[in-house]
Amino acid sequence: MAERRADRVGVWEATRPTDVDVEALASLMIAAWGRQPTADEVSKKAQRLRAELQEIDPAGRAVLVAGDPTAPAGFCKTWRDEADPKTWWFVALVVDPNRRRQRIGMALARKVESYARDHGGEVLRSETHADNPVSILFHEAIGFINDGEMTAPDGDKIIAFHRRLR
Ligand SMILES: CC(C)(COP(=O)(O)OP(=O)(O)OC[C@H]1O[C@@H](n2cnc3c(N)ncnc32)[C@H](O)[C@@H]1OP(=O)(O)O)[C@@H](O)C(=O)NCCC(=O)NCCS
Image (cartoon, rainbow, N blue to C red; front, side, top):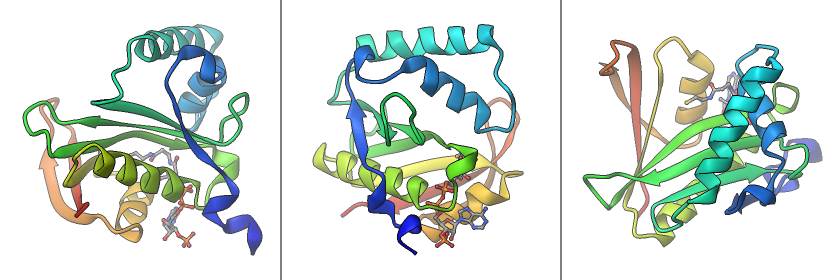
């Protein structure tokens, strides 16, 4: 039972490129979607992540990591909506395929909620592809309201979610 508890894996905020093994994180971001990442993919993603962490403004954006900085178990980002400062977004969530159903995703979501709330957020929004049933179940299980299917600007079918923070 203890293995499934969220608080077994700490979630923390990375604020500099040296806070975390960015290559390991880049690898996880690709492997989470069921693909074996190539060295080139990892290197390009790691480069983007490093650049993002280099100039991150904590008032409007955070990179959150679950677990060990050298072998992260999960990752997500949150950022303030450009048009509505009371709205924050929960994005880029991934959990290591070997560590799923241990409430790591939920721990990341809870950290995002407190981060957004601490920075004036009143609503947290998220989106997932309509053909990602696990993500839909996950969002609903952790308290997001399903706002239904819509078409993204790139034509993809997505499900929109929101959760009130206050
Ligand atoms: C979606 C994802 C982040 C969930 O992470 P996770 O750490 O495994 O999820 P949790 O253990 O915190 O799950 C919390 C609850 O969500 C629901 N849930 C999660 N995975 C589920 C699954 N495969 N089937 C059914 N329900 C599921 C359950 O209710 C679960 O609680 P329970 O285990 O007590 O039943 C993970 O599956 C993942 O990385 N998927 C690939 C990337 C992705 O789809 N990201 C989301 C894009 S928006």
